[in-house]
Length: 537
Image (cartoon, rainbow, N blue to C red; front, side):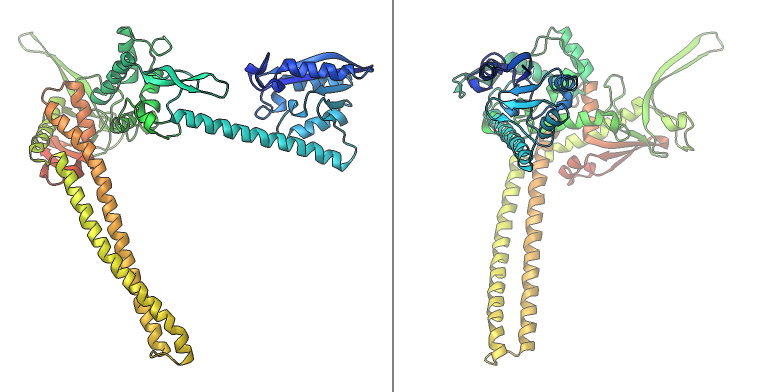
């Protein structure tokens, strides 16, 4: 009797017991193999191997326990025939599986049979080619299936439908009315109003107060809030919430649709500000960081203040001054100061001050910000900016049409001159070859000049449009800051200052140099206060 080992494999757990596509499930494979053996009186199944939820396309043979056990048993001469329903149950990797099958036959010394395809032999070159082509086709089918599934999932995501996985915070699922091929109703995302309120709190704490993820998680847990799966908030959970693609109206691949835009919780402007804050706080960017790692503390300026003399970072610190007077009374003063880290630790020959009284510096910077915000009263309204852009676009269109007509005229003239080339060669033209060559050269130069003018004009218009796109969000934030600055608490003032200024430098005698963020500098360029300001106190 020939000892037979069988191998059954399915790619998904749903195919283990039963499936609508019955040709793939394990019971069907087992039944077909048993029927095949019954027809052969000298065959006997002595052992069966099952692989449940194992992809023959994605998982290599060296990572599949069933294949490794079968190879070991073949070397020990424990069986004579390896039987499968179809050869692709052994695998679907075109540059690996053909050689696995060949190994069983040549090295393992066993016969490899398929219920559907018969025995795989390696007696001729045709056998080897057939073996390779079979698995090359199986690999191709897997790739096509993978592409179809990915494409379909991508389409479902763009339609706002739930495709599985953890539920993102801020949402819930409801029946969509759409059914799949199996007749099952799919679910779609819907904003959960209770979680939406919490989500907005997290966004506002991050943007307006600069509160870190650890603090936000602690605050949410103290207030009794929980994540979408009912667990306590952690720093990572808060960061995932802030970076959620769905809340930004797009997929993980940054694709968007009308359905996803309706599910948006975070605006584009807010998303950009969140990303900038998170990027600034990343340790990898610590040398260039402008936003403080933590918002605790009494100093307004933290994270983007540098020494004007050595360029080193300046950090806030509490300094205590204590001594006893002649009358025996104790003098004790605890004062917040900004300290040059390099000079205080003797890391370089800095000729600046070691310490600066924080209150004097903070008040000087706040005075500059108040003057900037005061000038907002004279700023054009948002509608005026859009009107200015509209007029610029109209003027651009007029200039472009004029240049386009000139370009067309020169091109037609060039066509006429080029048509004269043949006549010149036959002696039938009014132009000499030299005159014609010079005329063509002149016209070509004119065409190149006009094309360059059009390109420059388009480039300038594009820059103006992009500038307006950048300025309008800055305008809205500016207006908001101007209205709330005087009543804002310390945390809000910290975030306003670090977003308004890219860098602040402190020098001797409290000379303060303020470098405004380029976006706001462009927005306020018509005011003196928007230029690099120098303030001495």
